[in-house]
Image (cartoon, one colour):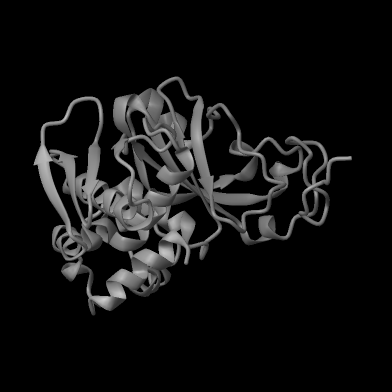
Amino acid sequence: MTPGQRAESRIASLGIIDPRDLDVDLIAMDANMEVVYEPLKGCEATLIGVGNRAVATVRRSSVRGRERFSVGHELGHWDMHRGRSFRCRLDEPDQNWASDVHLEKEADIYASHLLMPSTMFNPRVQALGRPGFREIEDLADVFATSVLATCMRLADINKLPVILACYNAQGIRRWHKPAADIPRRWWLRKQIDDDSFAFDLLRNGKAHPSVGKQPAEVWFENLDADRYEMSECCIAGRDGEVVVLLYLGSSMLDAGFDPDVGHRTYNEHGSRFTPR
């Protein structure tokens, strides 16, 4: 089973069908993992297992969604990587202090599915159409998750043509996460464009939590981007960062191969070039 399938199988075995019943501390207890909350320094959580029992120590936070994700992450380690000890940094998508990044990604996937199971999460997303951050915040409240974790799950379920991205206070892209079916031909800009809502947020402090239309050239480097329309919304992140949700227009999903951008590792059919 995949990490997501393992997490959702655990939820199903407990008979949980309502997000309000996703009590991660009780779910962990059922798996013989005790959860302790402490003011940790330098990491978000640690896990130590002996025999058939484990103790996960989670950093106290004013954001319950962050604590819950940490518990789910450590439960993922306990369920999938038993026999190891972990010291994990969970508050940055592109940083982790563990020795095996692959195992950390698996634990992240497990936590995401544990807190937002497909059977409960997907129907709620589909009912929203193309949600902006106001709707995402409401969804996060339902599942008691952070807005960022909820956005990442939104991209992961691959039901919408969405890209989640984070730019630093200087407007430089730190990371981005596209839905799996986003055509690889679209090449996201590394620097925020002056005409974007995100630039308005960086320079003037004006958030744009609702989805608004934008020319695709504002966000993509492709020379033909001026022929397409898309949507954008953004909110302030931590340390002056900007978190952006981008929705591709329907015509962008059918656009042909563009040989003039990117690393050119894919051909016009979307298949990876085989090295000679």
